[in-house]
Amino acid sequence: MCNSKEKNLRLQLRATIEANRIARLSYEIGDEHLKKIKKQLEKAVGSKKEWLTILIESLEKRLYGSEDENDSE
Image (cartoon, rainbow, N blue to C red; front, top):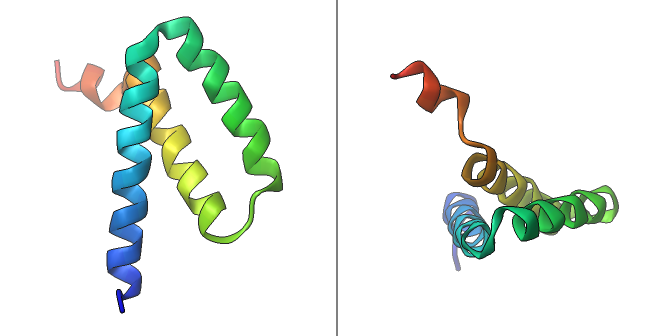
């Protein structure tokens, strides 16, 4: 049985992998997916909502860049 920390790490990993896959397609397609995912988030509950939240954060970083990256330059 996996504990809560392991479950959270698995969700983060799955969401990050999915975000990377979507972001590689193209900017326009990634942006469309992001809009659809944000609509799904409104109806989601539980671990699905947590996964979608992580997916959105990861996908936004891949598509639009991170402000933290700009600060380090």
